[in-house]
Length: 77
Figure 1 (tube, rainbow, N blue to C red):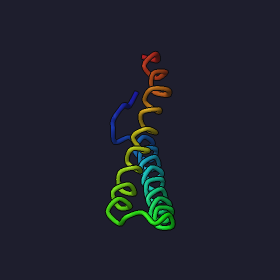
Figure 2 (figure 1 turned 90 degrees about the vertical axis):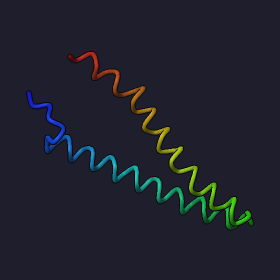
Figure 3 (figure 1 turned 135 degrees about the vertical axis):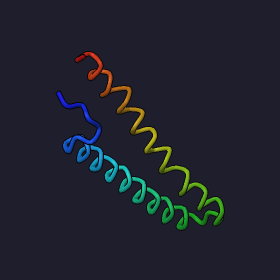
């Protein structure tokens, strides 16, 4: 068994997951920026919300993955 962190398969999966999460963050920022602009939010509040919400959503996605998917891997070894 090769459990190296530099395994090509593991690295490609991690890169794909990171790219997907980055895309989610960028798209969510743009959506929030546009919606808050249409609602007439103050510029500082608009920027603060658009910058803080996407990382919180990404953290929620990662937390759900760790809590729901990863525990099944611990039973294997």
